[in-house]
Length: 408
Image 1 (tube, rainbow, N blue to C red):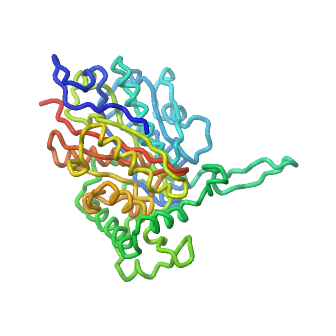
Image 2: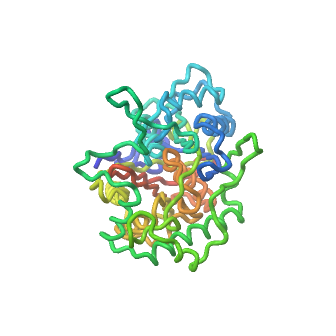
Image 3: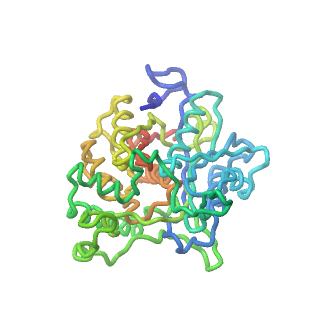
């Protein structure tokens, strides 16, 4: 486990014990995302940089930032074609050529890790300003192939995550492993997935996503809403889905996420610079961390990462007000929440990936975007939020964030 120290509310002429000074305290002052749409759905014609560029442009416009003031653009991406999509997207967005870009890959955790990396760069000092987040165009992801001895291509479905001696299970098989190991039955999985859809549909009706969404123009028209939540699901329909990965298993297409296309990013800088920018509020980065677990139970990775981050900050799971956890599978989401002692009803208040979809490299950044929107809706300074995600290969990442009113 590797983590960063926590940091909380600061005053101009005093730094409480254990907290970073204002010119090094990371704070997220804006966050936006595209709609999340199923693979080969409404966003199927847009490549990764075309998804991300409008989000970056929107953040710069929202805060009236001088484009040249952006120190770097840090972007997570998992199944793209390489070539540094961060640099490609920032130039597409109209940022000047003097702004560099870096693309990071920790599979499903890439978007959250990009934000964590930017936070650690802010903590190094100098009050820089970064755009950070993630993107995935699963629909346009390139075909992959190894070169055979004769020079011809040998296509493969996914990259190898761990040595073959570890088993390197597919995601669905690992979700079944977690369900069996941690006693998460089919009924609980189905009920949790159905609740995710119902929460997301309610959030859409009540306009909870309106302030965070960046509409995208496609050849078929403008896409401005999430494409995944299903109104017709019921307990009876959920019960009819057969096991999808292991004969006689409990993990089905109904209680698993679907692949998706999306982009999400944040503006992160120091508390000192945020005040100079007259930011009205933001999420202080209190702590971040990653963890490794057995690859055969990869879905449980978020739990030890979150546990260590909370312990380092001296915060109990019960004291966290908002929880956003990527719901790749209901089994692993419930297992992690059980391990942390968090009531599943408290997680993902507006629905999660089971309803909205999982856009790999973007998903971790979507979690942070959702936390800022939810904290703003509550409007209470001091609100604590926890973002966490499990990853292929047996890893997890988590970030503890604290909402603060900065002006007024």
